[in-house]
Image (cartoon, rainbow, N blue to C red; front, top):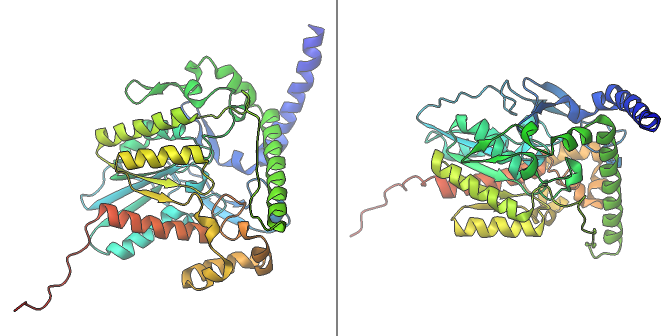
Length: 392
């Protein structure tokens, strides 16, 4: 008993100190709330400006850069509450994904969903009343997205569901509960989804969710990102542009959503599409692991689902290329004022992303342009051309 208390009491003291100091001031803790079906969700009625740089990377240290985040009463990053009842001429698009869809580090108006809505309205004009909803939540896997849609978003009756998952599916289970999301979040589309506390692994989740472990995971991720940046720098100096990253497989870094479960989740989304009469479009984000990309592309091909693939494309743009487009140049100008033109040319991984992974305002614009083209081409019949002169 003495040994137990000797370990437990210092842990509890340290845990509470971290809860009231570090965790209360950690940006993500401010805009998340507990959700026993999804682990967590976006805080309803959240309206604040948050400091740029989720991991406080060196590039943002000392920079007075913030981004605006507004969430409605439904806990969705949208300017207003969304009525389940939509007018007959509304074509409702829901973008469901992780922090890439959510728009980490960018203002509401610069997320790809917001910019896609603007572009679609310009392209379709008065033909259709377009509504694009940003239902992205940082850190979500395809399993959480499946549950989120089934338990909440289905009420909004989308005509099109844009899916963007895979980055967090590949995360190690040590991030959450030492088991896969399927075991931690029980249920399926047909039988319904249960609360987390019905899972036999719930206790492991509660332990790992304590502030002390959250802080250790955060700084562990910070160190990993710092190592990643150093490897990237060396690869750039060697002018090969690539580096090899290998990690030993063990139960701690087993993926939260293994590839087979990822395929199963896509299959259940397809079932939901048939049941609720909406269509699907896949968006493959930058850095998507090859195994998940292969599954998504194969599934999309076999089921005739359109795909917007940015898994590698963000690296194809150069500083001068962006200046040739007036909109890109305008967005780049305000961004370059913070980081500097010379810096962006020296470190191109920050040209279209804020941290090497999350698209900035310019990156989101480029994604939105491709997204609008794909939606227009696949889900809307182009207007009839004006009649030409009569043929003899």
